Image (cartoon, rainbow, N blue to C red; front, side, top):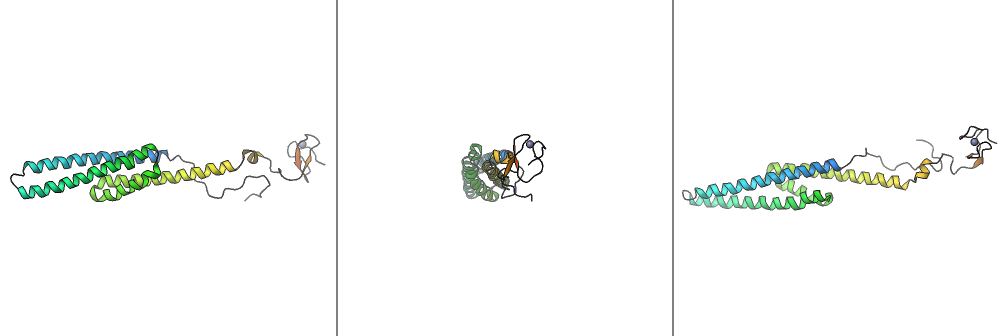
Length: 191
Ligand SMILES: [Zn+2]
């Protein structure tokens, strides 16, 4: 810990992480959500095809076919609702840069998705953690930028004796600290 000279910049009140851009985490999250949406579309198409297939054999097993069609249609409805929710509340918000707004819907899609559609659910969960760490980085960067702003550049560049009693050097005429034998600027004898 160096001695606190008057005019020296105040030490930062928190440890600084490396200044990393949150952008790569955000674009990873965006890609994960996009892949999840594509898988949801494929799932919806597969469910629709299954409905058609069951209806094609409905004449042979009328009751079983009805039950299967109702179950498949409910699953299809759930997938379409999650698809819409995922596109509007997660994907579009990430694309707009509204990470805070996208975070919670992405988590909900991950948790609900784990039960209804395993792989997209996992992708949404990973995307949620990517968003969370990108937001954390943004907070750190903002705190770092604020601390730099509150330390004036003139203070950081000032010699350590600013604010101490000074004498004028007879050789270079700069303000030198009182009580020293030589001028720190030109090396001339003081006093
Ligand atoms: Zn001098």
